[in-house]
Structures are given as C-alpha cells and as structure tokens.
Image 1 (cartoon, rainbow, N blue to C red):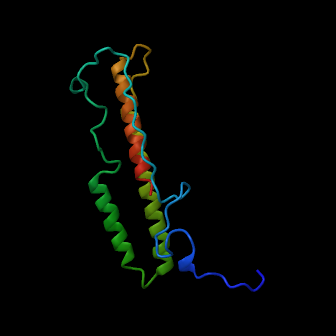
Image 2 (tube, rainbow, N blue to C red):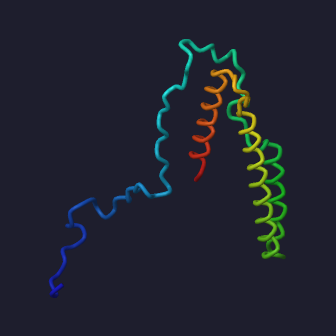
Length: 147
C-alpha cells in the first residue's frame, strides 16, 4: 500500500469483530446432521417389530458399566503416583487407555456380530431389514460420538 491509512476494523463490512467464528464445512468440531433414512422393506405389510426380537438390546454398552468403573479406578490409582514418577505414570496411563480402546473394539465387534443376520440364502427379509436398520443406528451413534 502507498502509505494510505486503512479504515478501522469496526468500519469494515461484514460481521462485527466480536462475532464468534462460524464453523466451516471442513471444521471437525461440527457434526453434520444425519440424513433421514427411507424405510427399507420388501413386504407389503411387514410383521410387527415387537414380534422380532432385536439382535442386541437398544443402547447396549460396548463396555459394561462395571468394567468402565474398574478402568476409572485403575486410572485414579496410577494418577496418585504422578508426583513420584511422572514418566512412569504417563506410560502406564497410555497403556491403560490402549487397553480400554481394545476393550471397546472387542465390544463393538461383538455388537456387530450380534446384529449380523443369518448367512443362509433364505434369510427372512424382515430380519435383513432390521439388521440394516441396526447397522445404520450403530453407524449413526458412532459418528455422533466421534468427537
């Protein structure tokens, strides 16, 4: 610029400088809305869903509450040693977290196996529809919890 003075920020067009930044499409902190699914059915009138038991209970935890409590207790116990052994505690905390992640992965694999319908070619269409819906719900739940 040729030494011209710039107008103060307050007089610039656009939102006020105090406005919070709007999340962009690439901003990982935003969770896009989950698309509404079209019901999947091959039946003119499917049987009532209550007649078909779900493969796993809705909202089943990947890691049971008792195990989560044990992991939390273990973490609190190792945290108490931080003053005396910060590096050792950091290493043990990382190992405990890795163990917990593996336990969650095991729970997730078990959950997926429980949803999986029969592999037989004559598997009931309604069971397949419910499996697809359960896969969708699980994917949606994981996508919403990713942050």
